[in-house]
Image (cartoon, rainbow, N blue to C red):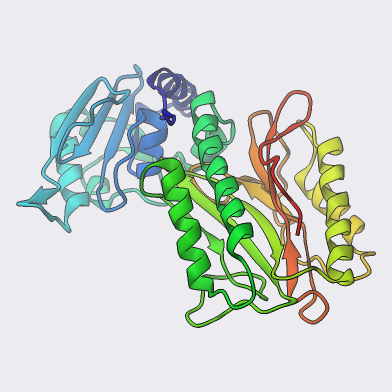
Length: 369
């Protein structure tokens, strides 16, 4: 089976949308240094320990500064490398070396009057050399990233498919006495075998009888407990994120009652979410659905977008005022928690794509306890 990669034609389309933003901002170039944004723009993922840079001028020409060697394929008009390693030793001064390479490759940058940069991560090595007025492009990039292109959606679906395999394995092995680290190792192996390469993310929650957290040394599952697994393997930089709760032994009446209450939330989401709907309003509606639950409380966010980060827009959280848009891929993760009656609670999480008509469920696999 051939797994997807970002497609160069879609990268060029993303470049075109970014070019429109540049025109509206009146900038002569945009410089990107986050590897995630370089991937989004050019289609090649560089490792977390290497620095890359991409610059696009107002004519749409893209120059990629790559660490060590040229990628086999990238949506760039010019690719230049710098030595990110010396005799196989990774350099600690890569940000400076990449900046020097960019300035020597695109010397006109130093003469531009207005340049857009990622304010939160812009290289000071570049800042001290540019005479430009610098404009923050971060908010625009995060907005552009929300609408997933077909190649991005394909990568997300591959990551999501790996979680299905992980949950199938979890249901096979979870039993009284199994160690949390044993579960973690088995599920990671399943994801790696499913995707055929190293993961670029693992997900958050592998604890039993707990709301969440990393696996604990020496902690074993016990009869009657619930095992919340919130898994987020990332494939080629794109993060899945969905949760299932598995009963270590047969669930009790309280646990079954909580599970039934949570199903009402998914029914509401799948009938009510449309482009333009308020995420804050949805959160409040779900709070009203779960407040009368005979067991447990719902006291965390309802969900969030996924993509090049495990949490991005839209935010299903009253601290933001987002609205659903076509192309959003988001999670919905209602939960109910009671440390005594639920041992310690349950969270179920589905992934959805927002379409013109409503939502498409991307995680149509077993929700049962």
